[in-house]
Length: 103
Image (cartoon, rainbow, N blue to C red):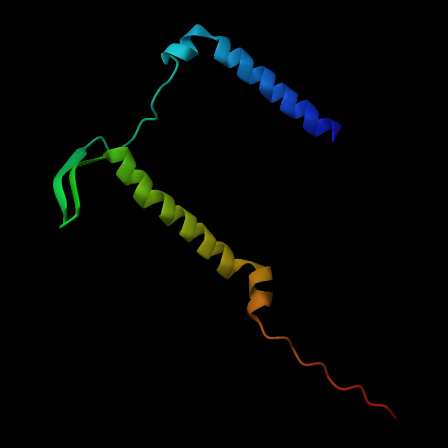
C-alpha cells in the first residue's frame, strides 16, 4: 500500500513539473509521430436520406491505424491461441483414466 501511494505521489509531482513548463502550455513541445503514409482523402458526400454526411477527410496516419492495429492484434492473438501448450491442453479432451482393478 505504501508503494502504491508513493508511486501516485511521484506521478503527481512529475505532472506538476511538466505542466509548469511554459512550452508545454503553448504546445511547442508537441511533435507528431512520423507516418509512412502522408496522403489525404476527402469524401465530399456519403450516405442516403437522413443519414447523410458531408466532407469526410481521412488522412494517411488514420488509415494506417485503422488497418494495422487490428491486424497486429488479431494476428498476435491467433498466434498465441494456436501455439501455446496451455491452449493445446485446453482444446484437447480429457483422457479417460484406466479403471483401477480391485482384486
